[in-house]
Image (cartoon, rainbow, N blue to C red; front, side):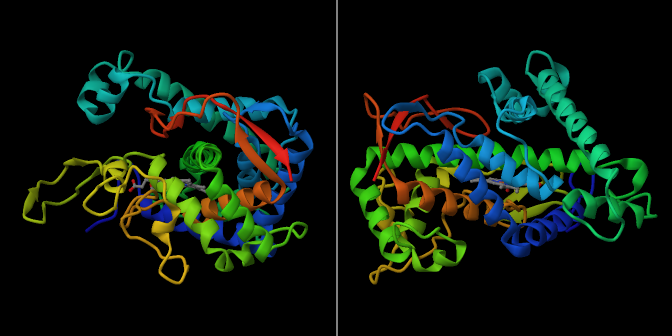
Length: 377
Ligand code: HEM
């Protein structure tokens, strides 16, 4: 089957981004180092023993550690551009109401009534984000040396300069670089930082799980050494907790819309060419036929009888199949480092009533605003 999405060759971009995400995040543990710096700044700002609103608490660190891979530098906390960037990304990922949701499932309706279905405002936010990234790309180009990429933007520009095929997304006249990076920021930032918010929410609701997680951190890492990604294979309980939060919160409830580009038959169902398909990821992760008591928060479901971490193919938080998320390993690395560093240092409690597990709808599901208290241990 041809791998072309409506509009442009997705496979070409996906291959490039996957490869370069790996190169620039793993090169001298760049992502880990950047994220550790971010978390140290985060700790400097954090006021222990007082209720702190959790919404957007992790966005700056997650955004900056990814921005470093894309652009080779990070923003200072007080830089107003961070808020601009964050707001643009969140405007694109939010679906404010029922009408917008219906429009998303019915492209004919969005085409007919772009204002009413929120498409106009969505397109405006997306265009502004592309313009923002474009400005940064132009700044970055001033100091690059061809053939010596410092980051993903440099690698993209190198590739553009070597591309003569007008059909390619790297063909210089198409200037697809800002679009591609904007799409990645949209996909990466709100997802991973909201995952952290859900982790805090569930661990404050389940202090017993939080204590077991801490026991594993102290045993494997100690109370003083920095956790590293090489600790991950030795920390099955931590892995199980992160996976269980991702499953139960189901923070990306449906996949991206995909079209069939040929007639196909799946499990006896005939699906004609050009059919819009959306997978119900939330439904798969809460299906009582495949999960025992799916509404129960139980990290042990990801451990085998000997306490080893076991994958479950019904956990489809990053989307199943060929069109799966290309940032899953970056996201998992970020979550592991953040979780181990926070719970190595703090016991976290909710403030007031237990936070609700009920999510507000959107492309990314958010919890109702809640506050938590970080108690130094
Ligand atoms: C917890 C964090 C994350 C979750 C839950 C998540 C989930 C998803 C899901 C469900 C999809 C759609 C898959 C489909 O349509 O079948 C997706 C696509 C995508 N994700 Fe993620 N994601 C996360 C983090 C990231 C990060 C960190 C990056 C980049 C560094 C990223 C980049 C992308 C991109 C570029 C796509 C589009 C792929 C395509 O068009 O084929 N995501 N993600």
